[in-house]
Length: 80
Image (cartoon, rainbow, N blue to C red):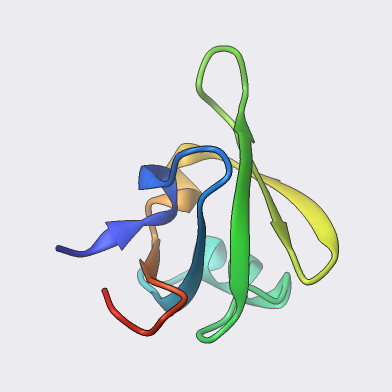
């Protein structure tokens, strides 16, 4: 089963496997440092569910759910 960032529950951690898509959304995500191999933790969802807040590399970042759905994850231990 492949998980995306929007599938994580608050407090869950994972490692980025790949970022899908093309164009400006993918470019923006990669420019923020969210590249394969980077570990992240889901911090919280906004009260209405969008955006989501993550913590990665010592900073907090908010992403829309449509953006979070393009970030595919694997478990920290290397499994999927």
